[in-house]
Image 1 (spheres, rainbow, N blue to C red):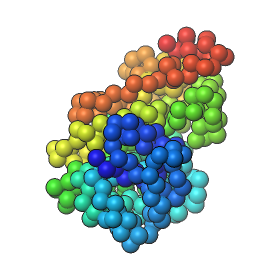
Image 2: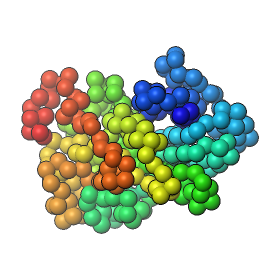
Image 3: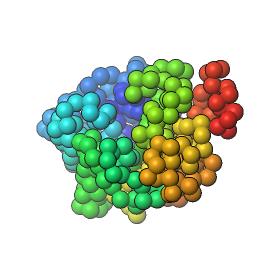
Image 4: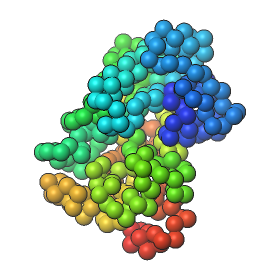
Length: 305
């Protein structure tokens, strides 16, 4: 399958491209910069230029398009810029993919659409939260990602001969970050474990970028018309915390203590059961299996196991 991956040179995109190539797909990175693997074909496009994207996708004749490109960090740019950029990217890319004849189109949203981290008055209605949990975005990034999901759903209602979907990757940890490279927030995974405040704002969600790539590969392989328009949580099975999940979540968000009490052991606060049920996908990696080169965390791993 010929797959165009927008943002394929990014933290998540690099792993998605690698996993898809290993699965036998012909992958093209569509980005402003080239993929670090010299064997990956690159298509440089300004994804905010609708005419250029439409023409470029038509010439490429993709079987599928995976849309990851976005301003990826909340508050990393003015709110209006984040909202307009991310929503325009989604509409331009999905429209061009459909027009180019792509049979499958998958776009990345975000768990932030639920509303966690809001400065006032938010608590989950239940945990683990799933795709049916009400959304309550409180910043431009989260709102833009909710719009991405709706753009996909809109096109799914119209392009009924295609399969379109969206997914919510949790806090992405790239392979090199298990070895000590800084994460998206600037600190290391080890520091995130030592200081629960770093991960508390997101209720300790995370996902290995390779697991997210394997979700994409599985979706491309399995998703059919009965799943068009569906959205999926994609995250690790456990929390990025030393304490049991119920304790960690209750300490981070006291208003959620009662609903967090049902979390068993280190169970994730976000459920990927839908992806397992419909696609047969499950995450394979955990910080306990991947952070093996951090001797100063040996005790932490034993406590958290």
